[in-house]
Amino acid sequence: QVHLVESGGDSVQAGGSLRLSCAASRYTYYTYCMGWFRQAPGKEREGVVSICTAGGPQYYADSVKGRFTISQDNEKNTLYLQMNSLKPEDTAMYYCAAGGYLRTAGGRWTPTPTDFPYWGQGTQVTVSS
Image 1 (cartoon, rainbow, N blue to C red):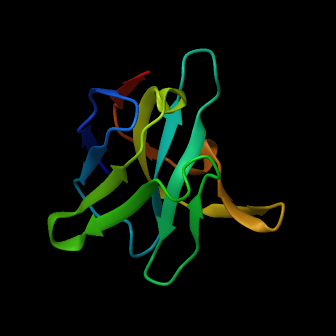
Image 2 (spheres, helix red, strand yellow; image 1 turned 90 degrees about the horizontal axis):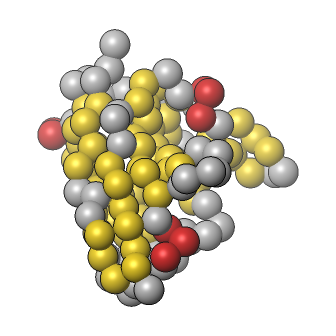
C-alpha cells in the first residue's frame, strides 16, 4: 500500500504559478510510474504529466507542454508539479497517482487513471481570468 498526500493547491490569477507536492509513504518511482491527473467539474479525470523510472517513458498532456514540469526528490519520496503561465482552463482538482504504468495510444505513451492503483485525496487549483 502507498499513501499519497498532495499539497500546494491554491487560487491564482491567470499567468501565475503554483507548485504542487505529493509526499509518498513509499516511493514506487523506481518500479512503476507516478504522475499527476486532474479533474474539472463535469469532466473525466485526465492525465497531466507522468514519469516512469529513470530514463523511462514520460507523458505531458498537449495542453500543458511548455508550462508544466514534473520533478522528484527521491530522498524525500516527493513528487512535484511546477505549473507556470496558468490558464483558467487549468482549474481542476489535481491528484497524485502512483504504482501505475503507461499504455501506448496513438503512437505515444499515455496514462489511464484505471491503471494507477494508488491515489491521493487531491488538491484544488483555481485560476481566475
